[in-house]
Image (cartoon, rainbow, N blue to C red):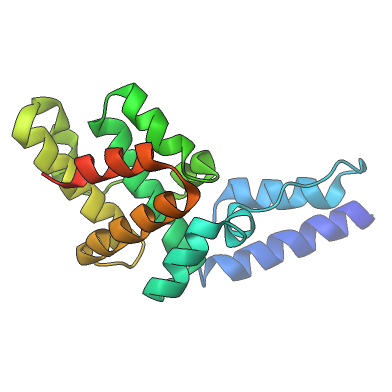
Length: 177
């Protein structure tokens, strides 16, 4: 009886929430399973909580007046751009200097720019379409493309303060063209 009541309340709440924000059945299933679970396994913190203690995210948030989610998504978008644009050893050097890089990558929105799918053309066309994809990701975060050029120097300062000069060189080279 308790489980069916809990399921009813959960589904009613989910339907109410869905009118105010995007909602998926996966979210409902996750919420239901976490409420009905009888194990005492520790729950993982949401990515936004994990990034709130991240020094790089904190620098970006405070200096640019963006939310932690926007800062983390912006770093993830830059990492995604770098991953597609750099040789793997350079990308590894850059990603290893970013705290919680895999979490940041997961917070990067998917590019919605139709031109970004043309990246397989190679050369200058590939670089331009990748940059268009990066701008599209920033737009999805509620940031204009001009914010990209504001993120880079702050990331460079962070790398300098943390002694990651190799990452500074990689990031500088990536955006100097």
